[in-house]
Length: 217
Ligand code: GAR
Image 1 (cartoon, rainbow, N blue to C red):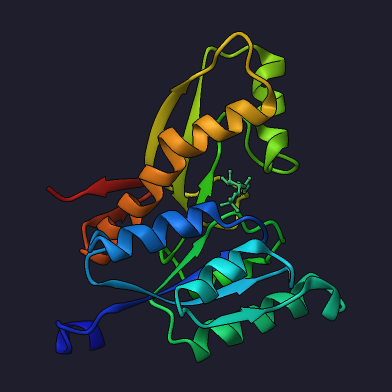
Image 2 (image 1 turned 135 degrees about the horizontal axis):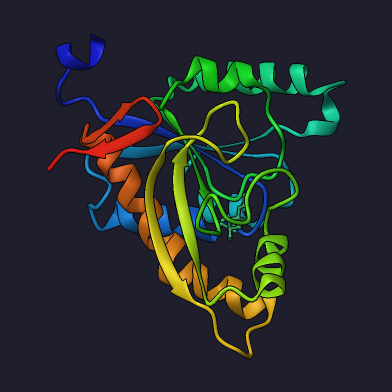
């Protein structure tokens, strides 16, 4: 409602990180090229104080917050603190970009189809509990798949189970290690589809019906 009354207002994007932040960098670069539509990264929240992603944010004058899991007694208290930060930031979209800490269902209920995550595999392969970071690529190589990739999806209560927004496939090479595969999946897939998904969201082109996302032309 408020959006319709202020059509020129930009969408505030809060990015959640825990590590290197190369996906955050891809978003920052896309924003600089004018490729996030009317989206602006207005805050980066890290679960780790030493995450390099925080340096990337600071280098680009983006406000940062650190909310560490260990500062809270349980997941519920941690999630409540996160939620408060989202409200304070007036977040329109929350993007999990290599965010490795578990949040509870209060978050996705408060931001239905307004929170997205990038996962380094073609969901429903190699996803769910325990599948994060390099582990995902280890599992793909262990299985011997010839194709893997990345997925951007909306976050629901089901871990890695929300409506799929975009996917991109990447070939696996015979001599890949988890590290070389991770690098190629990032370069060829994650860094491309995450900014694209954010742009589509900010342009109001993503419609969720049931468990599926439809992209308006
Ligand atoms: C990325 O590959 C991202 O897809 C993955 O962690 C990496 C973070 O890299 N996320 C998950 O595994 C979440 N389940 P980055 O900090 O350089 O963006």
